[in-house]
Image (cartoon, rainbow, N blue to C red; front, side):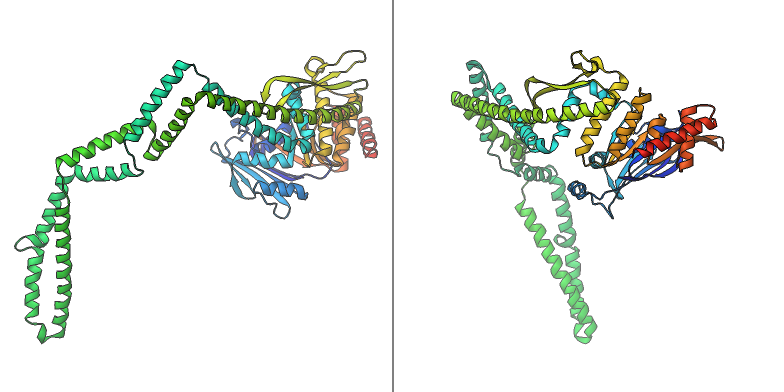
Length: 557
């Protein structure tokens, strides 16, 4: 469950912190008090795009932090699979926005927002103000069914996706392989030319790098030889060179070393230097003798490099890539030379993959249709509970024109809200308020089998009032027995059902408007209900009505 929300420098909120409880948490307040900011801040923490206008004016940074308590072992295991460990049963998700850049963290570890979304999908389900509009899309209907049947559908759908990818790969290869005889012969001739060009080059992996190194040496050959000759002359090749001078110095020391042990030590050190210098001179002489910088060798090297670079430009960035391209061309040539056999084999593979895809698609479809019957029945019952008294609710299945990664089902919910009228697509029948209740009914059914503990409803009561509002509140109370519910509402019938009631209010502080959220005591909750009931003037009669509404709601728990 969502245990704690901390918001700083976001829109009208300077800094606010709230502890949420089990059961039904109700948030209410005047229009414009900042109720939507609360849901917006949670969405922001969970990876939603940062809107510039959400940041508080002149603030250095904005911060949202969510603390979840996770006690369900199945959820913990799923979190571990995502690389997240609940520490002391807590998962802390935060997002800090500074100068237009944001940093998301899970348990103090910086993570990409995509990771935050994956983790959030296990912990919380947010129903926004306009989410019910998604019911106008048939794609959403199939998503709802698949969510309901996820335990039975998971493995078949994974196999379906794999089979579809395999089928599409063969289909693409088959489409690319169908050529007429003239085009085939032309491609065979071209491939033979390219293969010969690569094979005639006798390529060796790493040859180009070694050749480029040699080419650099040859390109600077005169400079190298001049430098070596100069060094050799100074150290040993000329009169008064370093070697000649050290030799003379050594003779001087030898004439006196027998008289003093320290001079003998100097003689030994200088002798070692003389030997090192002689070795150095021999190595330079050997290098000069072994190295030739003739024009013919240089031109041959230049031609070979041009050939290698030409092949790289045509077939790959390096010799390994060129040889890989050669292998691909050889395989393609072999197929084209034995074209009829290759095409027959490809067509056979296509038919086999198509049959396999048909089989797994039918299996997924059968599972969906079986679960659709129970889902529809449960949604219909939930709709009855939400004051749809004579509702007819069905799910129609059509077949897609072609295979998809999601199968062959084109499914859609149909509804009739009046007796005797035929069922029709939701968008042709349901009003905004009815769509909102239908979504609540669906959420209620899905929540029964869903491990997600926290559900957030942002003004689910849009477009409803009176008896319907009362029934919505009772339905939310039922869900709250198994889940933590956080609900923003403007209806007193729903607010009266609260296990914990919070007020979002605006105030002017230091000539700046700020929003705050605070928990209400029993007395304060009744006062807030009276405000929701009475509007501008709150009389004792209105307070008595609010108190009675609260008592009646609590008696139904």
